[in-house]
Length: 211
Image 1 (cartoon, rainbow, N blue to C red):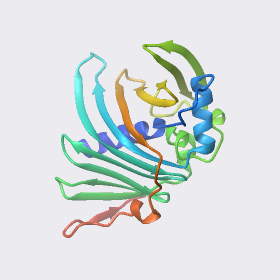
Image 2: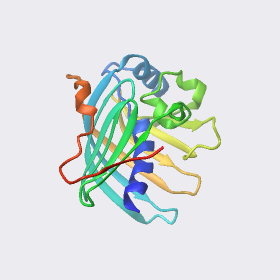
Image 3: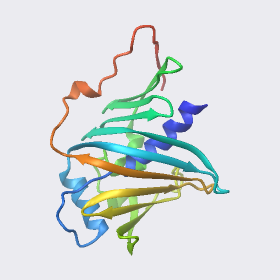
Image 4: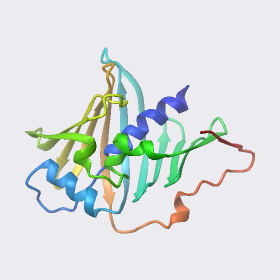
């Protein structure tokens, strides 16, 4: 089912979406650590490609994102079809506009043991993940991230930084599938109000609450 597939992959992607100021950092790890401590909000655009273990392109998507710590985010896929993932810090809503279907589930404490903690969590990143600077490749400083929890949904991830910003992201799962993202048009100039992250069901759309 496409909404569940996109939901799982997008949460992994959101976990790694990170930005820093335009200052030059000594390493990609320094840039990430600075962001976790100091960046409270941002918005931008993304393109996403899911590649099968055989190398075939399974899915493509483009859209916009917004986040506000702690725990609030809005990840909106515009193409190939509209899909909204929205969290107010307590619950996460997935809304498939074409199908007129919306579900809500609590975030819960499990967020601290997932990649989402890189962006929204309150704990130290190095307590949840093993971080390793990979060095300069293709004009970017790369950071490798591996979860310490072996039951995680991803095997490892790579973030490519340029000019203090993450411009590329790769998420590798245990089955060999890769999700690639390009992050562009970062904007740190304005913070959205809390109400921006509340879901208001359109007329005729039922919100199904699950645990």
